Image (cartoon, rainbow, N blue to C red):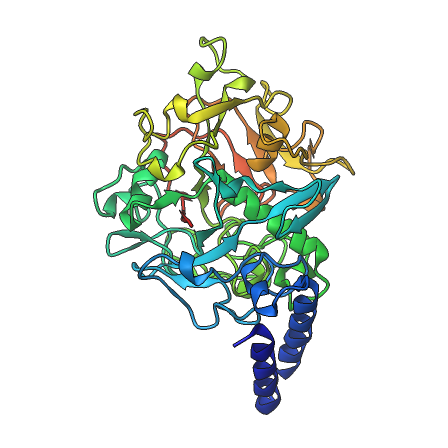
Length: 454
């Protein structure tokens, strides 16, 4: 059935229902029609469901995975191919985990204006998330929720206590194979789901934050983006030790039973907590649990002067590396997350250069992130991992970027943390990042999630 047919079918259902939800349903149908019009570039209308979509429209930020790319044994949830469904782009794997498909796309910053395209265009560059082993990949499945323990397997399921790297709070050591209770133990933890799963990369988190940012700015109705009614126009979360959002008290969470940590995906209204402001989106990106991101670290040995850490000791995963081959936090060549050989050096001079402590995204009208279509440039690499321009931060940041924080530090064998945790407030958010953590650290408010590359 074509997308157009599905919309007409849904319209008939709405008319027949004639209840309090009818208005919302009609709004969705009108927006869906607009979405089809904007996305359809003269191609067959059914092809639109395989594209990233248009910021401000229903279905933006996720897509239907082409049938020939779906991993064996996986299946799409009912409505995975319908842009007005809460399950659009949502799949279940052989472990029962829920994942969301995000297709390959391109972006262009013009100052703080961000454009997203499903196809290459002049001045646009491919998102780093879709380069692996020197090849472009069609898309990524990402855990919809923070990782949980499901019968010993690192999984993505709703309304469960999130895993942590500490024995006091649902430790990852209880998973199959007993991964070590440390931030680096998450590399082994995600492999309990299968050899092709990876600890979600910093590229993926930065991509989700970008999509949320573009969508929030473009949306004009909460039907398309639930979180835009309360500033900042970014995903809301479990924060300030209160099981609700620090900016939007209407967003509440179900307690997990451990301090003020919420259950995974338990935020309500749920659409306010996802990267695209819709039920079909990826949740748990703001607060609740810091999450360890792979693909970005800091090692003393990478600089010219090995005696002390410097701003050029930061490392970003090489495009030539297959991230699926990283199995633990060792220094073993090719498979260890702290093998210097799998990384390129990147300088964070000007942002992290002895300037310890918090700084916040946004500085008047200055461009927060750099733009360069040359993927070998530091500018491209910094934006790919969510590091702002030297003049893109300030003492309090801007509402436009959620006032999200960057904690700057020079930490050997750094484990990058993103998002914030349930006790956070000002610094937490989809762009938030913490560079002071070590791979052997253990914390009851640090967990992670997994990705699966198509």
